[in-house]
Length: 249
Image (cartoon, rainbow, N blue to C red; front, side, top):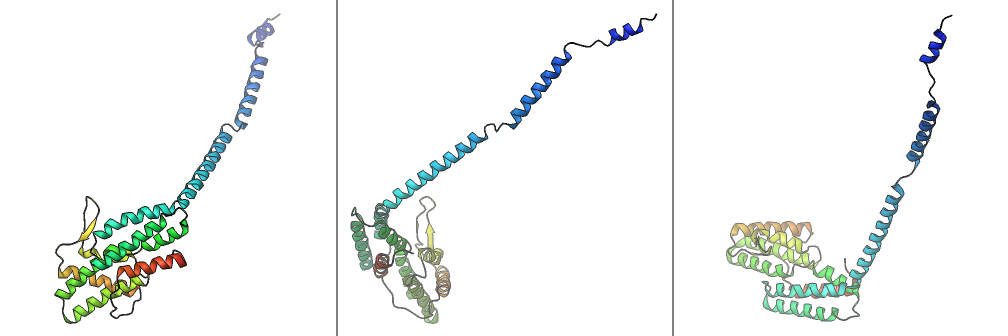
């Protein structure tokens, strides 16, 4: 008889470890599946983000409330910073004295502990729009025109300068507009960032100023006529009164 069946049996032995290996694989697969289904650290990240958002919102609210309550104090400090700048400006002496007196009166008034923050904010909104130190610079340009222009050119220049002042008085132009008009005759100190008028203005410089003045007046729809000069102190008084009765912008 042949021994081949026995040989076949010996050549393909059944390992006792195979059932255990299959069970281990199944268990590992189940564990991996559970691991993949778990949320991981996402809930913690979401919770942390929400918590940070809540904290930021609370801090923002507290900061806003503090600033709201301190608006009068901030306004006082701002006005105190304006006074030296006005003292060094080219405003006419009487106009300058009147403007400074109004500022000092405001500072004293706003320093009261019970001064309404809303009123302080309204006043500052209007005051910071006024070209107070630049009013005297317009006077300097006007003086140059009176000395160096003649005939129709002189009349045109003086008319457009008066229209710019009228636009400011009517709240149709701000300090930024006037600064732009005066840019051809201004010099900026690159170190300090301060600006001043050129020590020697030329006819070309003034021509550019007059051109810009006319464009500003046209944009503000100021009637093309010459207007009487108005002091900055008068405009300032007008704006303070409006702020107290009508509020800011």
